[in-house]
Amino acid sequence: MDLFDKCRSFTRADETKALGLYPYFHAISENEGPVVMIEGRKVIMAGSNNYLGLTAHPKVKEAAAQAVQKYGTGCSGSRYLTGTLDLHVELEGRLAKFFGKEDCLLYSTGYQTAQGIIPTLVQRGEFVVSDKDNHACIVAGNLMAAGAASYIDDGQQGVVRYKHNDMKHLETVISKLPVEAPKLIVSDGVFSTSGEIVDLPNMVRVAKKYNAKILVDDAHAVGVIGKGGRGTASHYGLEKETDLTMGTFSKTFASLGGFVVGDRPVVNYLKHHAPALIFSASPTPASVAAALAALDILEKEPERIDRLMNNARTMREGFKAMGFRVGEHDSAVVPVIIGDTEKVLIMWKLLFESGVFVNAFIRPGVPPGMEMLRTSYMATHEAEHLDKILAVFSAVGKKLGVIN
Image (cartoon, rainbow, N blue to C red):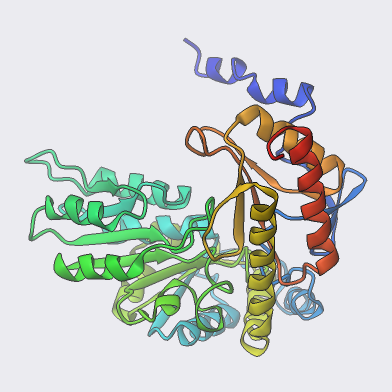
């Protein structure tokens, strides 16, 4: 067998392209926020995670441009050595204050952040207890932790999973682990596919009972839920009970990078032990400056969150009224569940051709029967955008027999 045989035999993508149904890697040539240019066609963007619409905000763009002029295009080193700018330190301080925590640490990408936390904290003889539907970045961090965090003598692995957002099953799983073993419960705050919000109050109850710590990934929660967009812990009033919150700059903060906030000793330990931080070039000046500017706007204009959530609620109710099956969760992600791969791909194409861009989620990315068109919304979507999205979904859904 040749190592590349599996690559040559992978034909699914090319076959889908040949049918004109390929929904991925379509290049955007202009981006105005709620409207983008893709392959010469202006379409309403209903699949972006640009929740507050800040990627096109003049202050965010100007901050990035000024940072390039002052600092250049990159840092040419890791935070550990030559890659720390005063911008990094400023943003860490601002985020720690924003979330009401003692300290913050930046990572170069959101995906990398979980790998800079989980395997650094969870070592041999310790356990990660993870939601079955956690984001791929958490799964990658878990896999890295599993190699070191195992009980060699009894064969128990350092990573165990519980049924999705099922706190009774979480307790069943965690109760079977060695009492003396340190444990870290990890979950998305808002699950990226469904928009579902974690049952944090019952997770906190279990964590206290079994002496476990909690890490919440708020990539899709910051700027969306909680007081002033402060995320899941704030949404439930459980800021003190949530030990660590991680997030990304690629959504609400209109940039690129990641962060974690928590107690100072924990953040300091990560800073000096996380390979994902120590051996990666630091976030670029433009990225950090853009995130800082976005944080300024989030703090000064909390009404953007109200507009975002009103838009998402309008769309959720609109889809339901037409007869579509949608996720009921009160976040900015509104999945339209079709339950059939072929129909999802055909529907995606017809939507695109009619001027609406959404995300197609098919197996194995979702379980059988959950194939969907994931829509997500921005504070900058206007009523005319939302009306068109609903009208196009209605026409396409009826054409394919998805709705009556």
